[in-house]
Image (cartoon, rainbow, N blue to C red):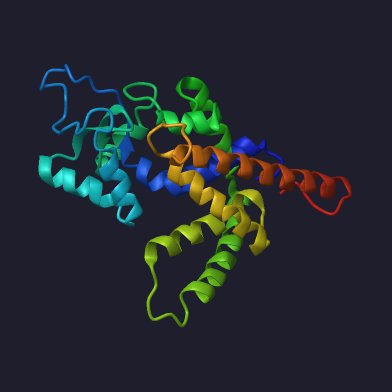
Length: 261
């Protein structure tokens, strides 16, 4: 991938990867509290404003985000249920059938939606654009993953995976799966999408990125001490680092010691 993409686009790609598993199962749609029982899936909206956001975040911090979905599917007896997340009434679709419905009906029955906290942090970019414009931009992004690029990715993925297993799995009596897999995905993302191979640079990005994620999917309270305020500071730090990497990469290309890919 072109390493000279704007820093905001690179940041958006990094956001999408670790949250993909969650948002493949959750599609936020506005559901009116006044809708008739026949048009609203079963469920409950929880506390005013907060809804069931605290329960979702708690499950994620415990390393079992899927439990939030499983508990409500079992409780309501349906793979589609209503709740309220991040201040918005939400319909949640679970399972393969739900995902097929969502991703085959974009701009027809459903539209892309992100919590206001994410939109506030990353602005208008490739993952937050909705409608036809967003669909075209995402299609352009996917065109980058051609046969040649995928062949190059396989070699990098194999190398990163082998190094990760040696460093984090071999010789260990116990492995904490959730944080270890998150670290692996982050290392892989840095190498595939940013061409960052230096472990020190990856480590420098990892902490602010973790802080950013904690506040990105949160209640939008821009006050000192809140997760959202911390995410804003982390986002500025990440952009500064990415801009520095892009500047160095451009200088190396001008000298002929690096390629665009």
